[in-house]
Picture 1 (cartoon, rainbow, N blue to C red):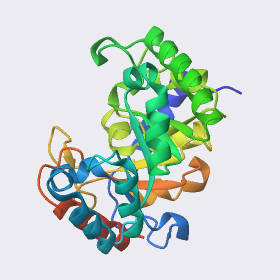
Picture 2: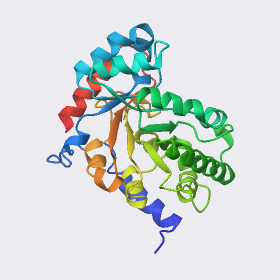
Picture 3: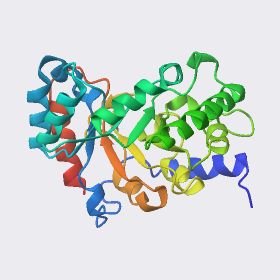
Length: 282
């Protein structure tokens, strides 16, 4: 039987109490080996990458990262991709916002080919401002995602779309997230679920995993700080219970966990502490 909006909100509200940090919860849980080595999206180290991408990639590999998500540095795509590979880092995903992907999908494909990436991520699936998002915008986003998903799949790549908090605004009978998930073709469009933004939107990642099983191939993991504003912080320094969430990795269909903190403006410290905390957890 289909789950009603009221039932989903009730379930999510109850489950959300378990999303935040519980030091002893699921203490014995271990991630499968293929998920135990996280990737990182390069906006977490944007300043070091701009200053010296070669040194930065070497340091990320030394920290234990195996996969990276991001664009092209240094001007020449093939040289950049070759250097990253030589350090032991595989670029598994790159991407852009919907407007750019629709305007020039061939460019996105060329970049993915040069980087030897599997995924092209749509980081913002709408054409207008986030201030006025409703069902119509969700349906338009889904249609555009399906169009791009088919084009990218034909070229040998997988499209995923990335959420923020506004997808979990109540539209009456469903959320914007529901509108998109109900109207994209799961064979053409996957999801890159940002756990922080889900929780910031007062939703529960585990409830989403159970509602849409197998559709969350990529997951962004950053932490939520202790402030009233629920700001971002480096993984392990906040209140999110990652053990509880990733205990449902198989249900979710997760293939890659990606560490992120796009608001970090310093050097490599956040990348270093995040992977250390991740490995201590799992």
